[in-house]
Length: 299
Image 1 (tube, rainbow, N blue to C red):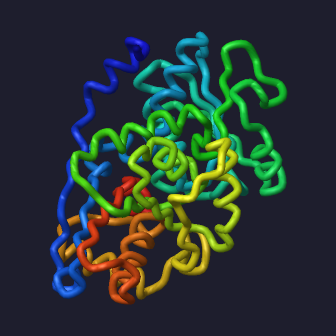
Image 2 (spheres, rainbow, N blue to C red):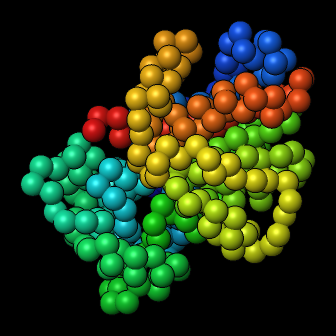
């Protein structure tokens, strides 16, 4: 049973629908590709951001917290969702932002301020140190009522919210696909995947092989029905090039679905490439999760 405030907020959400993508390539290769449109569940707290926050916020409210402290970059989808949710739930929010305070705020930072989030800019060294605090009460110096939320909301409670994606899919499939940052969304899907279908993560970061270890830490067990594609990062986190931008434009014109370059565009580019290379068997059905984050396109 969710906290009453959270239940009221959840009532503003839309269902996440499944949409089949049609393309001559898929017909030629005899592959079905479907999209789970988590980008449509809410105009602001979309995709896996809400999935990860849902039970974390419930836990914080249950403990009587009045303030959530977290961390992220100047374009963070996680902080954007947290700031808005905090405002709706009458929770104070504070964020440690990686890097120097910019002269001109990004649209994301402007929203965070608008929704009352306190911003503290820290060096990259200090930011890396913050990554060492994993539990809600582990950050040194926390006052009564303050709740610490690690980067990207990567906690066990996040997995519980992500797991609900699996229960919403009423279509048989062979492979479930999701973009990866911290690996929390991937871990939640693996944990809930009782059918043992294959799950593919697509790393948005260069050198994303650490995800294998981090996901296993979140799962607290070793499983074999998943993998992470490491070769489609386009130079690193938030890096892009003209090829990816052109792909995004083509995808939008062909399917009327907007992508963003940090996560979802890289995943769909990878899927097109892997299908072209015959990496999937004829007759297989793939479902890709659109994790939202489109607010970042304003920058």
